[in-house]
Length: 446
Image (cartoon, rainbow, N blue to C red; front, side, top):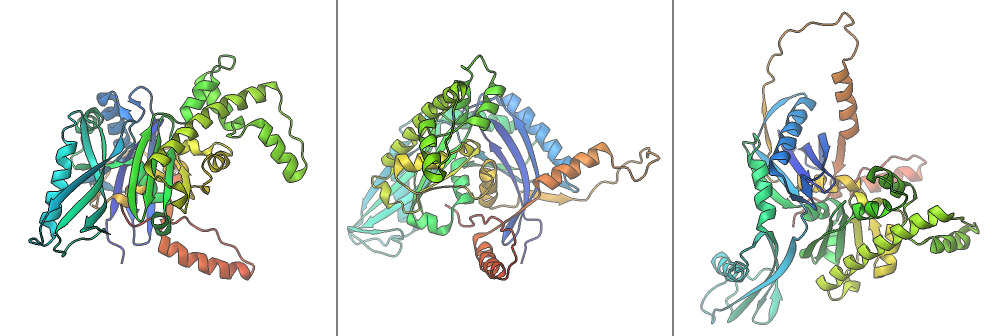
């Protein structure tokens, strides 16, 4: 049964734009009600707030626009904020207790173990921890994820704590505190949110890497046996390619971005020529300018992919055991043949996200929202205003609002519902009819 007024409000901080989104959470789906976007410049750099006052003004403006874009009044109780700031990474921690068969492992013992492990981390004064993932417990030499109830001689606990410089969180919290937000804000890792949105239960069990290609940062998350094993945010993305292209005849950033979208390719033109001839006997032609663009793009994307592959090998010593390979998402993942380049470099299977890459973090943040984010209010009666003589003509504001709602209203089904629908669709297809599948989003959390 669908819960009434179960709404999620999320604020996604990217490195090229920020998004404010309101959605309704249902049993088997998410319904996007409104998305407000703003491009960013020096206010945020590599995912980190640099000018908190300017960011707070932007967010305040977006909140007002969001409230005007829906047909009901509401008060904000909670807001979920996604961050992917450069420098955030996971750190291994460990703690051990000698229990000598005298204590039963319960919540108190596990809390003491965690506090002991965190005491080592707290020595790093410039860093703050935000998320901790249990890797495993070892009870008298036996590995387990659930040691509760045992009465061992010794227990060891292994964790991964995601940390970042204190300044990352201080600047962001200052920006949020300077707005009119009265509700609580919850900080979530953007790349974890992306993983929630794009992965299935099978992916997380068998082993998978999520690579979220942003404009100025690239998030990496390794998951195996349904446990987050590694998180890292690297300081490069699609914007690096764009900047490299500005060296061609003094192109502006806007012109270079358009050129990257039109002609950018992750594979070298010589390989593209060989592929075309082998696959369909067609001879591709590349003129001088096209070759120059290609070589600039390939040089940079190969450097980025090499760094990603180094992170994966560092995080998981046997990448070949990550059976479900790599899933790519994020706006910069749209670069042509990026899937092929990643496969060549890693020998892992690679697939693009099944949902709109730029929206993966938004969908994931909504799934992570555990508390209802807004309280509905009665719509205040509007003051009487002058009515134009053409009563049936839509106003400019109404037209824009209809266009906005039409473009952002989306239904996202959960994996269970989508699986049932896929079975139905196969039966319908055999009868000669076709229906378009809706994407399923992940419902279980990390």
